[in-house]
Amino acid sequence: MATTADLVSNGNIHRHNQNINTFKSDAYVRSGFSNHCSKHNGKANGCLDKRPFKESFDQAPLYVAVLTYVGFGVVTLFGYFRDFLRACGLEKCNLAQEREEQKDFVPLYQDFENFYTRNLYMRVRDNWNRPICSLPGPQFDLVERVSDDYNWTFRNTGKTIKNVINMGSYNYLGFAENNANFLTTVADTTRQYGVGVCSTRQEMGNLDIHNELEDLVATFLGVEDSMTFGMGFATNSMNIPALVGKGCLILSDELNHTSLVLGARLSGSTIRVFKHNNIQSLEKLLRDAVVHGQPRTHRPWKKILILVEGIYSMEGSVVRLPEIVALKKKYKAYLYLDEAHSIGAVGQTGRGVTEYFGLDPSDIDVMMGTFTKSFGAAGGYIAGKKELVDFLRTHSHSSVYATSMSPPVTKQILRVLKCIMGQDGTTMGIQRVRQLAENIRYFRQRLQEMGFIIYGNEDSPVIPLLLYMPGKVGAFAREMLKKNIGVVVVGFPATPITESRARFCLSAAHTRGMLDKVLNTLDDLGDYLSLKYSRHSRSTQDRTLRQNSVINH
Image (tube, rainbow, N blue to C red):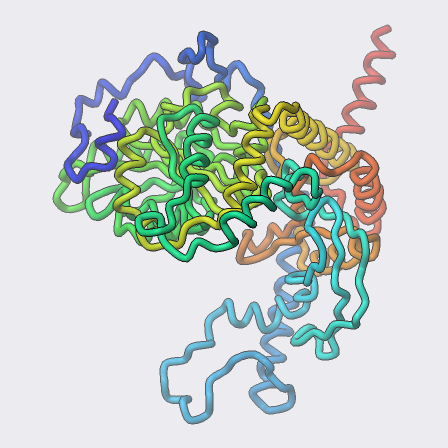
């Protein structure tokens, strides 16, 4: 297998035009699962054929799909009609448009997304960008606002909606908190270092607490070294171009986050997309890349980099990491793992999907994660072998040009890491990891029993609930807010146009009473809006099993 040093070198890695017979390995069965598990810390690692891997992506009945398309069709027709009225001057258009004296220029505002914003998004715009006026913990306060012009503009009423249950923030372990007893060290750091550094790490912005954080992150992940950045998005978008460039191939999951997509595009590498979590699709692209090489010249690719996420934030699915690791070893490729949503949230001790599957962290060439979710802070990290990190310290734009991480943010991350690792002398961190897992299982099970279609892995804290029809997106969010429950609803272009959904993010800070209130409201609202599309709810299956048991006895 190629070393990590090859990943950061400018030369070619092992040539890929090897004997095709070497691709035929006894380590694979027809399903693509690996039969061989490596050892880590003296224990056999888990793999998918030993650990149950349960994900649900139920299909809605046909009539739901038909009505969804009809709904979008009706709204689109009304949109064209309203555009006609605007063109005739019978209706005012409040959105940006071309000036009369520029009518002969190339149009700037005539694409479909602008049409969508003007005629579809505006109908439900009141469900997004609501101003919060408190800590975004398990509950928060909202500024009440109303619109007098059909959501084109908003005005605050001066009132506050108190104690809204927060079901949308990525506060997985509940560390976005303002308990003075817990934040004493953060307050002391602010007094000592101030709020801002006003310099880059390579100039006057390298603090001792930055070095301490990077050492602790490497220890937490079980790798040689790590480096941190002040912005999670830039951790991906600015570091991928430093690792690959022209003559390299990037294989990207079709549902990867925008930061990964942007980083891949900025790199100048050739990009090919494989189907989401589809091992057969990925292996086909790898095989073709190895056999055929670069277009026209057919020279071997300098590097082949696979981009995946630990947990996908819109689907709630978990990456099939053991199989992907096996493929990257088989075809001498490199693996870039984005653990923004999985670090802290999965694994027995919160160490992400590598721990979840029992894999050796050294099998991942580039480990990336953010501190904006489970850690209640900001920024991100890159971790791996020392050669990789040393290379990025001098070649990454995010390292060379970006301002250093804020000292109180750094101390907050240190506080959380020590809490999770038990270095603070308490078991609070591991208790929160276990509480999150318990909340996830309970919430998912109850939703399935009610008959909702939900996506994702059974251990994922991201739980999408499918709404489908455009008219139900706004109605769902508004009705939930009336019950003092804040939810995130998602639609096109963040999702396929026919798969609008509500996305719930579970937290260890959610009490059973909060979850029960949300679930009871969902049960009533699901009947009111006819959202229970699942053909096989868990309760129906349980009743069938009980009936069969009675008959057998």
